[in-house]
Image (tube, rainbow, N blue to C red):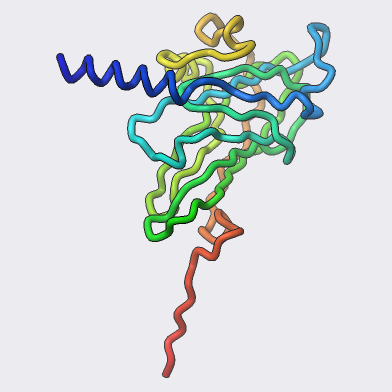
Length: 202
C-alpha cells in the first residue's frame, strides 16, 4: 500500500512537471480563420504519461499536418483542434537515441487522414519502443471507446477542457485512416547512416 501511494505521488508530480501544456500553431492553413460558423472536423490528440522513462523520447512531440506544424504536445495531456476539412499526412516528430551513440536522432512517422466536416477523430500519439531502432510515436486512430479509456487519467488542455472526450456519447463513423507503413532503418532515419558497411577484404 505504501509503495502504491509513493507511485501515485511521483506519477502526479511527473504529470505536473512534464504535462505543463501544448502549443497550437494557429498560422497553419487548416486552422486560420476558423470561427463558430466554420465547417470543421473535431480532431483530438492524445498523449499518455508513459510507465517507463525514456528520457529523450519523453520530451514534447511536434505534430505536422500536410508538412506544416500543427501542434506541440507534452506527456499526460489531450487536446482538441477544430480543423478545416481536408486530407493529408499527420506526422509526428520526436527524438531518440541508439544505444551505441551519444547524439540524439530525429525520427518521424506518418499516417494519412481524411478529415470531414462535422466528424470527430481521435488520434493516439502512441509511443512505440523498437529497442535498437529507437523510440517513435505512431499517430494512430482510435475509437471513442478506446479514447475514453486512454484519457481516464490524463488532463484536457485548451478547447478540450470544455469539450471533454469523457462527455461524448457517440460519434458517426469516419473513413478508415492510413496504415503505419513498415520502414527500413535507413528510411526511418534518413539523416543518419544507420547501417555501417564493412566489406570483407580477400
